[in-house]
Length: 153
View (cartoon, helix red, strand yellow):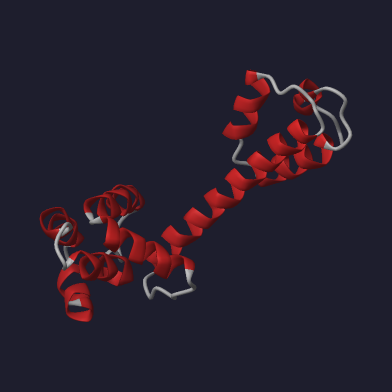
């Protein structure tokens, strides 16, 4: 189903999404998802990429989702720019989340009380430089509220 489906669905990726919605719980789910992420989504504008990129996996059965996630994590090189971007976005989000958790873990390990305000602000940050700065500051501040104070350091 893969290369032929990619060619068939490239002009109208909506058909791939509808196919996932209709057949995503069947044995064909993995092939549908792979075909979509391997090239059927090429040429979509950013808004449709985001919507379809979220809708497609949610329409697939758990086994197909796990297989696609494993392919993305294992270093499988998707051929489509869309799929590579989708994987990169997921990695970036994972790095941001890990750094935010590191800031909080560092503060808590030092026995500093982390207020709701500080926790929410740290978890809301998507700026890697800011999170790196906060990790370093978490090592030297005496109160967690100092983390959010603006400084030149």
